[in-house]
Amino acid sequence: MILTDKLFFMLFSLIPLFLITGPALPDLVITFSIIYFLAIFIIIKKDYFFLKDNFFLITIFFWISILFISTFAYDKIRSFQDSIIFIRFLLIPIVAYYFFFNSINKLQTVIGVIFFCVIFVSIDTLFQFLNYESETGFGKDIFGFKSEWYGRLTGPFGDELVPGAYISKFGLLGYLYLYFQKEYKLKKIFEILYLSLISLVCFSSGEKMAFATYFMALFFLLFFLNKKKLIILMSIIFSLFVILISTKLHPFYNDYEIISSNHYHQGLVVEKKFKCEENKNKICKKIIKLQPKFVEVITNFSTSAYGEIYNVGINMFKDYPLTGIGISNYQKACRNINKYNQLMVNYNCASHPHNTYVQWLAEGGLISFIAFIIFLFTIVYFIMKGNNSNTIKYITLATLLIMFWPFMSTGSLIKNWNGVLTFYIISLCLSLNRIKI
Image 1: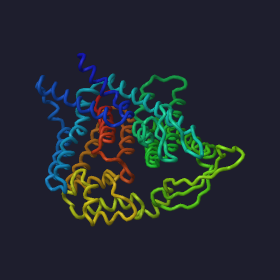
Image 2: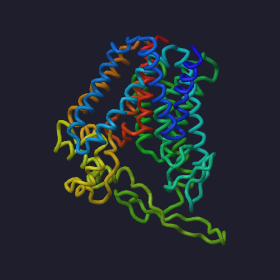
Image 3: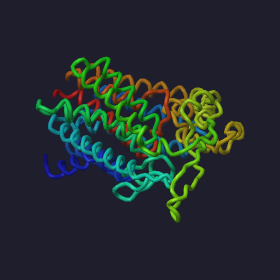
Image 4: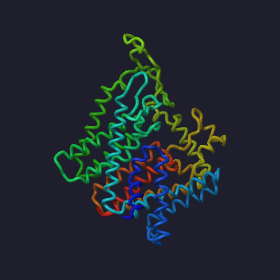
């Protein structure tokens, strides 16, 4: 590779690390990498071979669908603007497969980066988890970051509460780093410890969906991944054991009394007890509001925060079934149109519907929703037709299951951080199965 190619490959392979710093840096790297790719292949080399790729054609079809529906959007300018620049995310898998991840050595390099990023985020988040006081909650991480939400962890992500989402989505791809290593005496032990570490961090982070989808992926692998069945089973058992010990011994789960509990946002009200700072012989008390219990949210879903947010999105889809309300128009329409605003009885209008499928229905209608489903099935098709081992195939499918399980709250694919994370992982899942290892 020439010097410039090496520089862009290095930057592209470090995106998992850049994602820890926030949305700006990874978005810049993605944008300039795509521009560089297009300049090299179209302008300089005049090589248009990737234009014939079936996945590229499906990608463009998906992009055209959201451009088309923007002509009917509530706020056309906003919809066109976000639809046009969305192409930078959609092209990540194409650029990765044909340029950055087109050899086993390159793939192993980025898998190594992911592995060490997952380990780093896990250690930093657990450090914060152990740095706990009943009065103030979880303390600072290694870099001094502290969550403003009592009972939630930031890890190294500053004021973002995403360590669980980050490691649950990257975790299984990082596991491939251990899989690629030659056999040695303690390899199976390290694999079990690594998979269990992710479980513990997802659980302790307070991100219920990250923990639930990661565990679901482990059971998926237990069912399909015959050669690793014992390792997956032992990881599940050890994870549950460590989590049980954590809930029994860590004061966060034991130093309170429940005052009241309902399904509304911060509906779990507890009384925390701790030694008074001015007199250690006295016990002080503090009322803390926490996120509601998962069971209460499910049993009273329609009037929960997510229930109202989803309901607005579904009503937008009902009103505009073919084209939706417009890309990135959810919040503006919710605030400005009385019918939708009145549906938010207990909460303010959210920035997006907090579910990938509801978002495409609400903002893109059936046209964009069907195009998105075709896009997902195309990814699965290429993975299933891949020419590598079942281990690689099923680990990438399990990773997609974590990201696209329909019954969960999600970030918006239109937004910088989540968009880069999602399509970068898609690019790895495709490249790992399309390139012979």
